[in-house]
Length: 53
Image 1 (cartoon, rainbow, N blue to C red):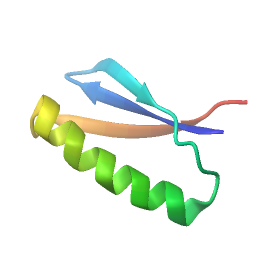
Image 2: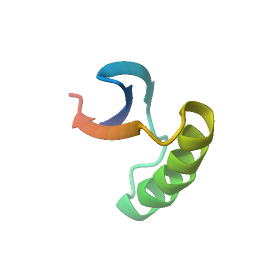
Image 3: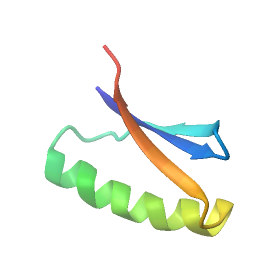
Image 4: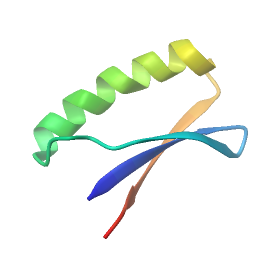
């Protein structure tokens, strides 16, 4: 499973777990979420993906 951490100033603020498994759907979902996170936390936010087994 792929999860995405929202990192602000080196600290993980929240973790996003996409419900879909298709890469196309995850990509579209994360584009939407990245816009929302930039509005919520500002431009200094980073999104990092990682695998969870």
